Length: 289
Ligand code: MN
Image (cartoon, rainbow, N blue to C red):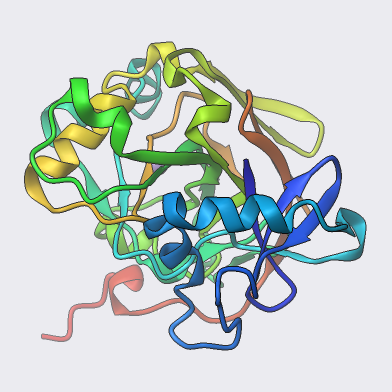
């Protein structure tokens, strides 16, 4: 099943280019704040499924007539793995690795949708890079799960771009600008994706293929990413884990279009725009005293 958020926080199921609106079916007020509707749906998915399937018998709205939004926002955690493909570690000339350094967090407020642009901060002389990643969406509360049990905790997957300002400042700050985590275009449930151990990932900037890899080359695979995260923190339904990027990262600039495609997960194309602001003392390297 492919789940979407659209038109101001409504939730739907995408099937055959039609969006079936299940907002009322699942008792969701799309205007409620905080916007946790998708998190609630994931947490109660098994019990809501019969009602969702009944609603899908009704007609849907053509996909072209709706505006897709970030399929999930306001997760409890947005976890991200650093260098998780050996070739990316080599191109960045770092010894940091997901298996020996573990994960970090990005601000969840950096999540944005498949029809939202990446807004570049105003940081003269700095490069902002694309990182092509698989998003793992947690479905069940998980604590101290081992790798053999981990896939049972996964609800689904999405495409994710981990946008990053290159530099020496703390990674969390450089990766947490608003719109720096486009995710989507949908959440595909794990039953549709099947085995996540051999998915092809591609990322283009305009027409240039910049990244092409396969999840079989991950250092920490999907079960081990979930297991490691759950060894530290309780994972909750809706939590997002970004897989780490393969080699081929590079700069994006205003006017570019970044396209990500993951086998059986989806494809989305994101525009890049120049914003204003975003600099601070850390970026300038000016100590207060
Ligand atoms: Mn990354």
